[in-house]
Length: 139
View 1 (spheres, rainbow, N blue to C red):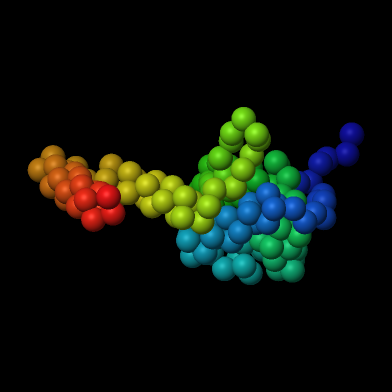
View 2 (view 1 turned 60 degrees about the horizontal axis):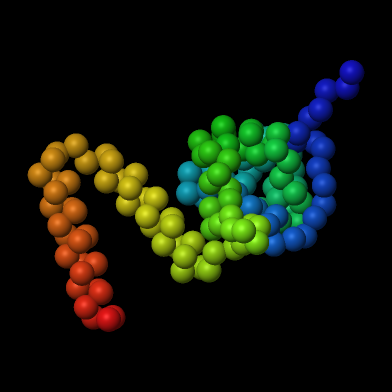
C-alpha cells in the first residue's frame, strides 16, 4: 500500500477560506520567528510552494496542518481564527472582530502568566476602569 505523503500531495485552490488559512499560516510562522526558508526545509517543500500555501493558492491538507501545528506549536484552530460558525455556515469576521479576538486571546494568555494576586487585581481594575470610561465616552 503506498504511503500518503501530506507534504507532496496537494490541491490547487483559490477561495476565501484557503486564503485566510494561508494568511494565518504566514502570521503564525512570522510570530514564531521562523523564516520561509527554514519552514520550507523542515517541511521538505520548496519556498515557492510555501508561498502558494501562505497566499491560499494551494489548500493545506489536514495532514499538512497537523505537521504545521506541531512545528509552529499552534493548535489547528489557530489557522481558522477570524472565522465564526453560524447557522448560515462558516463566516469571516470583520477585521475589527478578528483583531479583537486575537487581542482577547493574547490578554487572557498573558494574564494567566501573572502569578501575583495583587498584580492580577490591579490589571483587572485597570481594564474594568478603562472599559467603563470607553463606554461613557462612546455612549
